[in-house]
Amino acid sequence: MKQAKVDADELIKTYRMEQQDAFDKKAAADGGSGGNASAKLQAETQQDIQAMQAMFHKNAQKAVDVLLSKCCEVSLEVPTARVRATQKLYGK
Image 1 (tube, helix red, strand yellow):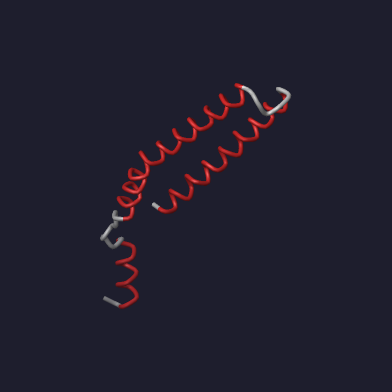
Image 2 (tube, helix red, strand yellow):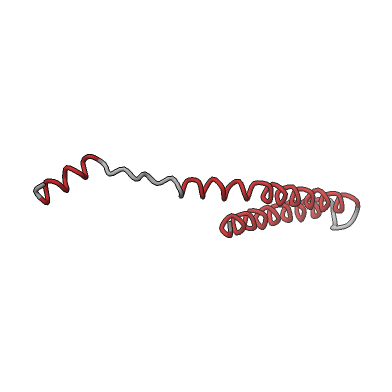
């Protein structure tokens, strides 16, 4: 669960940097960092980040459940090749 959170935080950080770079380029192209376009882009970025965080929180428990179910699937059968090798080794 901690690893999933770290991974999600890393994704969010990367996404924020990409959006900030896009924002900076757009602001420079528009001739400044003020105006309505700047606020609109900032709001869209925040919405996207919130959506990503919501998806993480929604799916985090599902991911943990899948990992735990795979960890608990242990086969208790001894392969026949191992049984033969053991019998041959110990002469039974």
